[in-house]
Length: 196
Image (tube, rainbow, N blue to C red):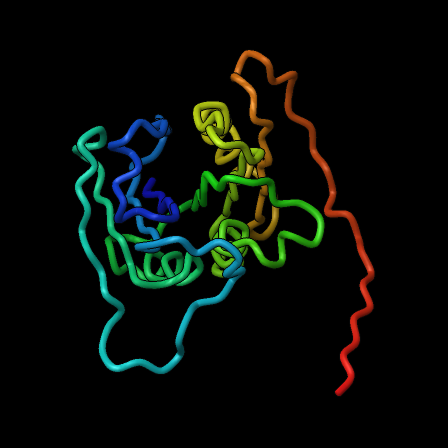
């Protein structure tokens, strides 16, 4: 079962620098991610008209020698499209996006590149999980990574059309997390105006 993992800053080789490695026993993993920071890009797919293909670099992560890793010069949602269209092999059965530093909830989900990638997957009929950890100078990445396999299984197992799951994890060691609970997106009405 192939799975595309859309993770920001793939080109920086974050997995080589101590970030947690997520192991999902029931699938093979291909990492397709933006080449740089894309926070706040929402579900943007980038420029619609361009000269030539999107720049793509294969990246080596020493801690993941058997995993193919690609960095694209494109926002997270575009990396999902590239994977879903079969650019890097068979289309994925699931997409995990993140881990994003900073929680994504309320109206912030509209602007999140992490959530945008997972939403894009769902629009293509692929279950998606957006993973975020509470902001701090040194986030507990391992805490968020520990919940990814179960979140993917949950998203894949939901009945009906493909869904998006946004997993927001506290910045605490894994043993200090008291459990997982579902929450609905809080409805918010905003009125903005500008006059010239």
